[in-house]
Image 1 (cartoon, rainbow, N blue to C red):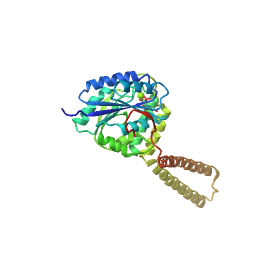
Image 2: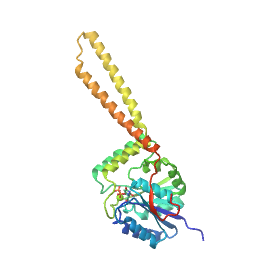
Image 3: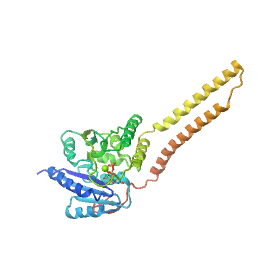
Image 4: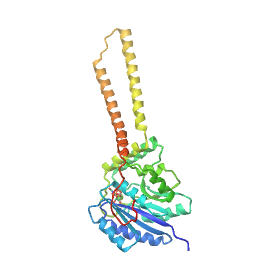
Length: 316
Ligand code: UDP
Ligand code: MG
C-alpha cells in the first residue's frame, strides 16, 4: 500500500483552555473523515497563563499524533505560526486557529485543491465579517485597499491565516526570516498558485479574542511598512509640492510689489507657511522613524520565538 500523505496542522494557542475541548473533538472528527491521510497536530502554546499547556500534554499522552511546543513568553500569533512551520514534518502544512473560527471541514476541499487540482496552496477567506465590530470591518476595508494599492503584494480582504500549503510553499515562507512578521503579506509575496475558498464568518467557539483592535491597527501599520516603501516616496512628493507652493507664492509677492507698490501683509502668510512646513516635516520624520525602527529591530537578529518545553525531537 502507498504511504499516506502527512498533513501537519499548526495550532497557535494563547489561553485557549475553554476552546481546546471543542478543538480536540473537531480534530478527531476531521481526521476520521480524512482517513486517507495521516495527521500531525502541532500545538503551539504562546506562554498561556491558564491550563492550555497542561491540556496539550494530556492530549499528547493519549495520542502520539500530538506534538506541542511551549514558548518562554508570548511571541504573538506570528511567532506561533513561524515556530509551527519551522517544526512541521508534514508533506502539507495547514495553520488553524484554536477557537474554531477556521472551519476544519474546509481542509477537505483544501487538500483536494493541492493534490488533485494542481494548486500549491489553498486558503480560506470570509465572504462576510458578520459579528465583527463595525469600525473594525471598515478600518480593515480601508487598510486592504491601501495595502494593495501601494505594495506589489496582494493581500486579500477577509483572508485568514487559515491555509493548507505544500512543502515547497512552506520552505519558501521559511526563507523569509524577518523578525517583524506580517504573514498575510508574506503568503502573497512568495507567490505560487493559491485556490481561494470562501466561507461565512464564524464566531469563536469559546473564550475571548486575544487580538484587540489596537493590535489590529499596529499590525496593519506593520504590514504597510514591511511591504511598501511608498510612504517614504510620499515624503519626497510632499517636499516637492510644498517647494512649488513656496515658489508660486514668492512670484505672487514680487509681482504684487512691482505692480501695485502695496506693502505685502506678511505676518499671517508666514505663520501659515511655517505651520504647513513644520507639519509636513514632523509627519515625514515620523514615517522615516518607523522604517529606521524596522531596520534596527531586524539588525539585532533576535530569535522569532524561544522554546521552553516541547515533545518535538530536534525542535528548531
Ligand atoms: N494567539 C496566539 N498568540 C497570541 C494571540 C493569539 O497564539 O498572542 C492565537 C489564539 O489562541 C488563536 C489565534 O491566535 O488560536 C487567533 O487569535 P484570536 O482568536 O484571539 O484572534 P481573532 O480571531 O479575534 O482575530
Ligand atoms: Mg479568533
